[in-house]
Image 1 (cartoon, helix red, strand yellow):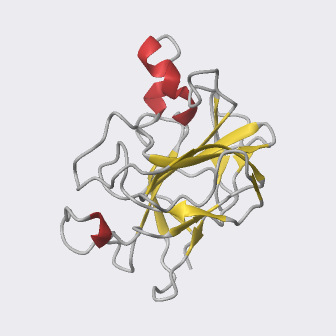
Image 2 (cartoon, helix red, strand yellow; image 1 turned 60 degrees about the vertical axis):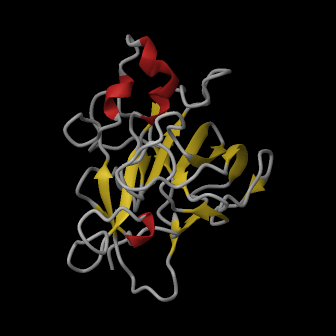
Length: 215
């Protein structure tokens, strides 16, 4: 854990999740990932509203308050073939391999939920197919994975860099992307309700508009 001078308010401590979250497909050129949600302010991070502990309906989702959403873009800044195509496979990030950003133990592993057609959302399964790792005192969730792609089970001990699954469009998502957040372990019955922890990617606290892994 570390503090970050660019993070304000209650935005500490920070979990260093590492930058090697994706394995690029061999047939794709190196392409950066764009942060579409991230930061410690409503203006840059749509997850931030869940930080309000006074709202009972938000408590079960508090852990995602500093969550980061990543899409992949090409050299022109485009993230899909066409204008908001319905087929999730048309998005550049779709099927990218998601790697463990830290060593830990699998505490949640959900698979079997379908990909949604864009822009439909599955609000009954907010994180969609997902994996949560317990890395020391932090739980790290990687969500919206594709059905049938989750390669780990609850209880597995995982080294950093292990292939966990692939990016899909399951759950409460408007288009294929990877959701990542870190939190303290949540209470019984609300595993995503722990106190949120900001994370560092590529050595910095990611904010909407940042590019991660730019060549």
